[in-house]
Length: 117
Length: 220
Ligand SMILES: [Zn+2]
View 1 (tube, rainbow over the protein chains, first blue to last red):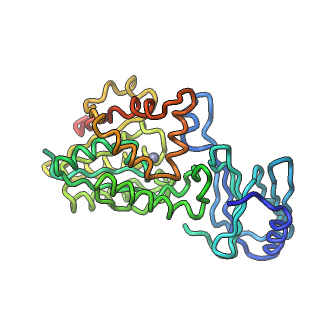
View 2: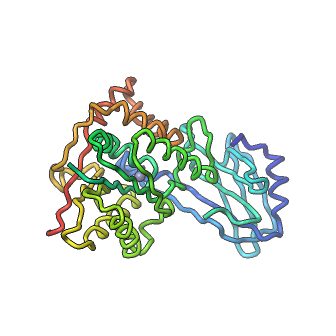
View 3: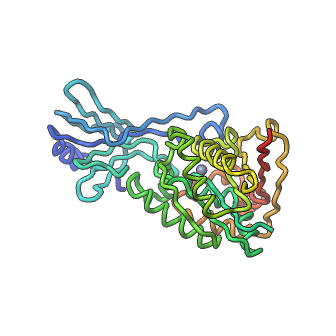
């Protein structure tokens, strides 16, 4: 993946507006957080291949990281801490945030076809 | 001597961290070893350092790394096809009968798996429980022995000392080579040893000097 280029990403997000889109949305601090540090908590959530439709999409820069918000008819999709991007299989937009060791902390991925499951 | 050893863990790299030395010892004795790997670690968060994987490419990358590690360890590999982080939501009876079929086919004399509820990761606990259930369902005269591996910080306190303590210092190099085959994962995990010690090799050697297991008691 490479560092986010905000104009490019905004363009790509716009292409998904008003279409049926499959999303992968995830955040994690790993399965071993509380094993390594007993004061830490294991926290994580993901949804894969939820089919959604949004009518507005925006990516915003805040210092070194980015946030993305997708406005649906009756709700929102939101991700914070994004730093890297890639187009996968010509059509899937992958956005992710990583820590200093290269570990994934958050990801938001959009595609017009389902992700592998 | 064992006739055939089957190792059942959920993730690519569990075999190298958990039982590489033990498997190598069996292979040196000429005992066939098969690794049944539950998932491809699809939801792992280590993407390599520097990053070379993403959420979508990770499964194929980890599969290649796993094949490489199994070549280093000279063990046969079978993929079970479950998905990372979801095994505890599968029907344990279905997973157990899936495993039982494979075990009845291979007819191992020993099964190595995780100790349920003492293996930290939910997939470890769930697949360990299913593996033990699979063996329990077998006819008593055909049952292999089970060595269960506990990795919680307090397992000795909770379970007492493991009865199987394999000194694997002789196989340290091969264990490290197997671990490092998992290049997307190893840097992150080996990096944890680096926290307060410079000499990673020394820390790893101390940490990887033995592999320990509890012989499962089906009578209890
Ligand atoms: Zn594991």
